[in-house]
Image (cartoon, helix red, strand yellow):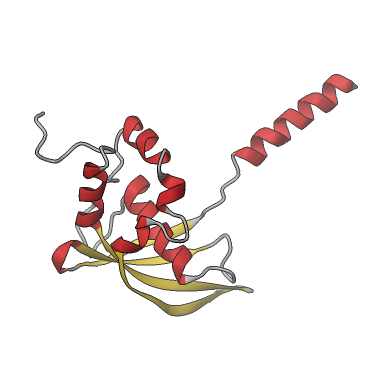
Amino acid sequence: MKKTIFILFLMCSIFTCNAQKELYSIECISVENEGYVKLKLLNYVKPTKFKIEDASKDAIKALLYSGYSSTNCPTQKPLLKETTDIDNFKKIEKDFFSKNGKWKTFIRNSLDVDNIKIEKITIKEFEIMVNKELLRKYLEEQKIIKSLNTGF
């Protein structure tokens, strides 16, 4: 009996740790001048509490970890392509995304555009402008990723 309870506890804790804390969709609307991309973002986990600040952070996370593909823009691979890149960024991530963190310098013109009603849930839609090129240069300066002109 104790063995069964232990196994159930272990399984529950594994599933709880792996639970998705963030679930959002991102779409590139356009590539702007001066290195900016305009992204449309919807969050499905906490739609009523989702704010512009949250959407802005998620837009940056999408550029860092997943990239995007869209019919409106060229496909963007994630800026953190290698496991070492991700590990290096994890060391500064908490400070980077803190209340007064560096992430704010890469955002411009965030808008709460629309509320989309799906069944009984209202989901907020945001448009976020992120300076992808400046973010990439910052990551290079912090030695998180290799410079584009580094030899192959």
